[in-house]
Image 1 (spheres, rainbow, N blue to C red):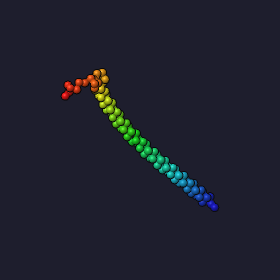
Image 2 (image 1 turned 135 degrees about the vertical axis):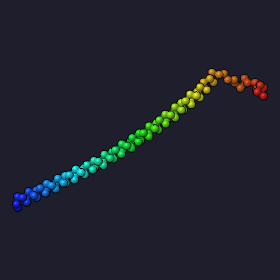
Image 3 (image 1 turned 120 degrees about the vertical axis):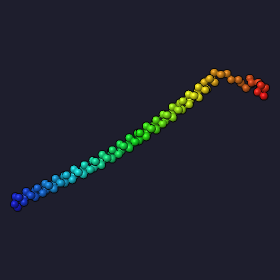
Image 4 (image 1 turned 90 degrees about the vertical axis):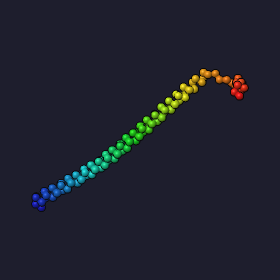
Amino acid sequence: MPLDLYLSQINKKAAKRAIESSQATLQLFQVTTKSSNEALKSSKAAITAAQTALKSSESAMSLALAASDLLHNILSLVEPLKTSQFLEPDQVDLATFF
């Protein structure tokens, strides 16, 4: 076999290996890209869930503040009654009401 033909076959084999290596690198890149895209989607979903939870928490806090204000108002009405003197039923002269 002439030297030129032998070198040509070696170059073809080297070129074939280089192509296979490039294809493997491309496949690895595609898998990595797909994995990164899935991780990005997952992160976006986690951010959306966190934002929803925050809105829910803010709504719950607003509701709790409204309930607190309502209880404060009720207590402000009830507190004066605690110091008032109430008549027992036997102390009331029913004749004054009829």
